[in-house]
Image (cartoon, rainbow, N blue to C red; front, side):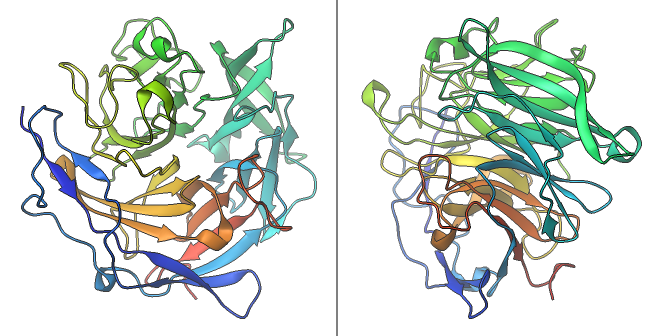
Length: 414
């Protein structure tokens, strides 16, 4: 199999805070060479070329959107993890200590929509959240969280909640999947509905790397369920929710408009025998093995899927939530939030080739710190969650925050 390593020149956008507190603009600066991530075609042992492959577009400042505006929608949250939007205009936000918060008419409501009994330790707690595509009719909300068993073990659970239309508050409806091994690290946690109407849940290896290669284990996997918790008959492994395997700690899911291709963000190793960095963006296909812990980065073995792009041996993205932009000047781009990198990344893919990266552009939002989730709202604006109270950031007094990034040409721009 052929391989190539595509060096990408990345343009950096820095946040310029305006005179109005809580608002700012993202301003492009001249592009500069940085430690480049690696776009990987199929893994192989042949040396990569040093020049970019033919057809790769190098991002430049003129390619960027001039001065997108950043506003603070809500502040003083505690480690928000996921955001979703209801048809009536409300924003639902999960907080890792166990609260589901509501932002309505631009205001963060004082009382939580629901508080769950979770085990918040390390990276564990209340994580992913998704509203049912038919929320207006059924009022269902789906969340994943870590809890502690009676004997002290950490486990992960996926549940369906339901809103009482009379009170506007949530309550437990049913447990969809339970007993998945948990840990203070590597609990995955992203919950998303796909365009096929199925419910997807990313699950980390819970610090047991070998479980990622065991298809009988639910750790180190991307899982796929019907909304009622039953297993779809077209899943790749009979009577199993496992959709793909060989994952270390996947935290973001997004489907490409027009093609329906699923892409996932994944945290690479943090050092030790496995090396460092090598965070990944993967094109997810049913039943495929994505290699952890057998290979990382651009290493190869037969039958293992290579990442579309990875951060290399010295650069850490710590990628989390992801979303494809569906309207405005960034339409078609894949955005993903960076924790340790404190960066919002914009990845442009070739719609005709699922592994062909056209450009990767980091937008540094350093004043806002660690970024956990990103989503495009019904108004066309980009919503971002900070994660500075997660034990690894440097929180400002008003952290954590929900940010709203407005691009020229979107309906939300004013």
